Length: 266
Length: 266
Image (cartoon, rainbow over all chains, first blue to last red; front, side, top):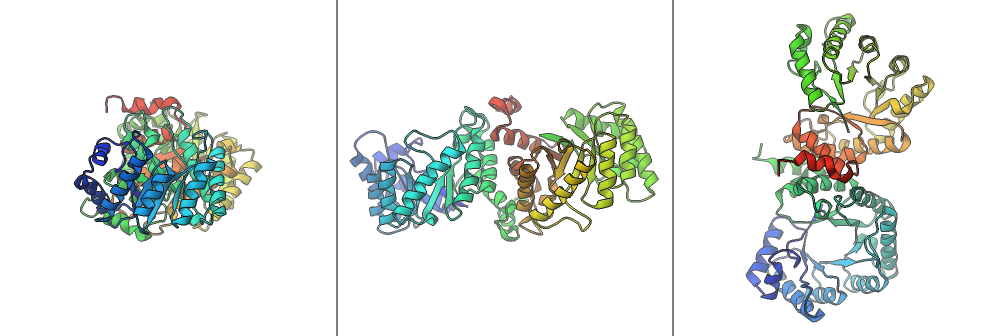
């Protein structure tokens, strides 16, 4: 399981201020702690929702340069704006990145998949189109098929695609947990070469005991075929859930990582 | 999710003594506490491995009569010996029971399925045959097919069959968690009318932190299609795992049981 560290995201409390004030030590602390906790990628999302596209471009260049000056962990360049994605990729100077993300909307798809091709970078493909997040497995898989077909056209191999089945709160529609998990399963069947990635915490939005729900959903998602989780790598409960789920699903030879993770605890 | 309370089983510490000494208050306490905790069935396994078949028959009759004198919860009559199963079913006097169990071995199958037919009782069918527990999904499903065909022949509807995919420790073969979960999935696909049941704790045998592994395995199994768990209904961690998993898999309308279960805790 690959952990995509989610802590550098301006939608989280305090992060917007770090980006706007160019607070280098605070940004580096967020990157180094996630790297030390085992993140496979560190997500960098610097959009503030105000100012021009240029503001976000400058913020992305700054953040990427600051982080890669100290941290070797690959970065996940995260923006809804293809120009910001490109600025981040350029600033990486050929170092490994993950593009986050495209959806199955023609213009967006063409621009982002071209970047993935030009920079030979893997990308996250969201199971949604211009009309939003579909309610059913079939429609989400159809969005993934459009993304797969655009990738094929631009010479981006499926090995470089992380499909995100997307997750909506079960508090507003109790079927949504199953829709996400079943979408994961169908993606792994239809595109065995592709990978899957998703954030978990949306599933429990609006309910009490969220950590318990997120942990259980991670267990199920790993069984259903999740390859990468967008999460806080410092969340010990979620990290332990990964170790446990991998021991149970044949991904931990002789259960060695699992038993090692418990050393000193029992 | 149906909980089959597992606490009255002579393979557990102290239970053999209760059965042999005909300790009525102790037996009743084990039954009433499981009923109060929400067990859908109370398993009754009184085999001691010594003495004749008659000893086990007398013990079963005694246990069934004592329990049903005080507790209305259906009983799960549990023995490897069809004569003991029949004694238990007779003692039930037509009250609801679950026969536990048959395997796909010709003689055993014929005797136990005949009982299910005569007593119009549901039964547990183990995904194994005379050679033991198969290592692969395909062989376990084949054992279930043999059981399904015997049931069909004796007029036992699939609605009355609980297939047990069986679980072996991941500590000895890391693939066994997946074999069990995938067997569950295939059973639900092939026999949509049938139910599934299994004990969980074998999966974690030989490893530290067993409760954590069992909980995660229960999350996965509920997603894979488990209908009934053979477990301790007083184990709060496992009971909570059921509530959480049902909220995530669309089995808890408006997540009401989940939020109710947390009342006063958050």
